Length: 125
Image (cartoon, rainbow, N blue to C red; front, side, top):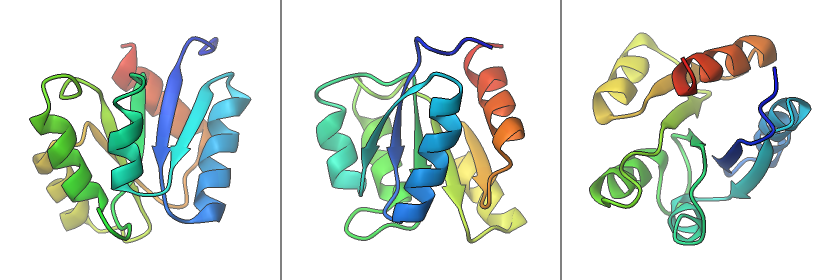
């Protein structure tokens, strides 16, 4: 599977999670940029348009929920697929994430192959 033309923005405050997600994506040839919080994410979105965004829900300063609202409110970024990842998994959180406007929801820890296959199905069905 050649995904080398994809550019992904990973928005995550935990160093280990950034490393794991980045390694999964770069293994498939995907170019990865990272932001440590929602404010950094919004600043980076002024500079480039990623194929999709992987966003942690629980972050300091501007969390994933608030950041998604800002992304969806901006006509220049509203169309970008955003997938939620979180260690605080429950059926309610998954449902809330989808209702809030996330395109998909993934509980941590991620299963690398399934994660990428699900993203491919979402982005390029």
